[in-house]
Image (cartoon, rainbow, N blue to C red):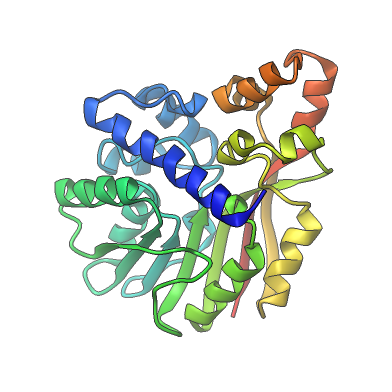
Length: 277
């Protein structure tokens, strides 16, 4: 599996999800995105308050996160926050009221459709301190040392070059700047048929790496005070209900209700990490 094919598949997959919101119907690309109500339930389950979920523009919460990175970021008024893989703008809109008018949130995404949706959401919500720019998180279109905080929610696992992502994050952070990331990692390796699947990659599973390797990328980029704030098993019901995982299972004649399926799910964890430059 090469980097270009993965990126194109991710762009296309998330682009379909963004386009589907125009008709008011969420795409079936992700099980957790069947409805706004279900996306809200997922949001609460992964750490967002009802108040946070109620304040963001409609169609910004697509239910594809795996944690609440801003919860452990200790963001303050007047700071510049960069959101890697900002999607429809959900986390950017959560952070915007915290940094207020004197601060700024910059969302970076590679999908034109997601950027279009995020900008429409920002306009609807009158977020004047939020900007969305097109860019690859492995090669950020941002200057050195501009950010006080970097957040990211279940996006870095999609990259085949996570070392580059964290080196770029380190580059754009100011000295003393903070990293706060929620992502998917592996407790144990996945079977090859999942690991080598593009559909599994879009579903945030096959791109995940062993937790010790993931932490090493952050350390090698230069970060210190690397801390696992929380870790939880990825919910089996969400994984098995995901149409992308179901597609893999069907192709491999794999029984998703089997003990083998439960074993695969037990290998996947959602994690929240903080670190400092």
